[in-house]
Length: 165
Image (tube, rainbow, N blue to C red; front, side, top):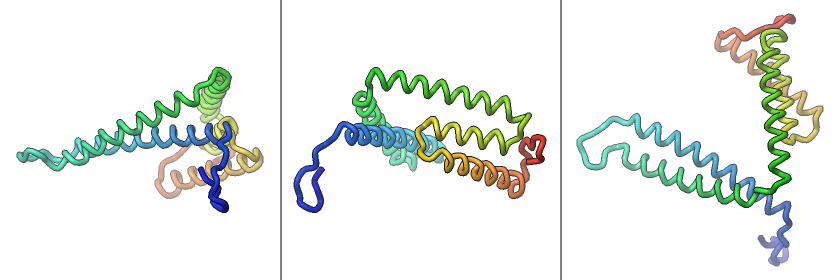
């Protein structure tokens, strides 16, 4: 990296390198997901009698996208692996599973809005979102919007709980 104003190199800190490796890993996972979508769509294209049918180019692009995404994710994962971070990830994963189980148990009792607001806020806080008060407000807002979309616009009823929402 270079300093834009003076053109000199910016010293790379471990935090910056860690953030770049996480971003590269996330991009790699997104590339893999995109490759799966492209390959599924390519498989749905109709067959033809030609040597290279309509699915040839999308299949090739899907395979290349998947290979490059996998290589990028693998490379960044190898860079990010540290013993302490592994323990934190295991704790975070365990806590996320507990929040998800609590959501499933509370859904029929408390209703969709209350239990999903707790799920959204809990997951966001466990994943490191700043400003807990905002996270809770966003969780409630998201839960209400999803409830209204499914209930009013689509017509699917979600569990309402004791408050009717």
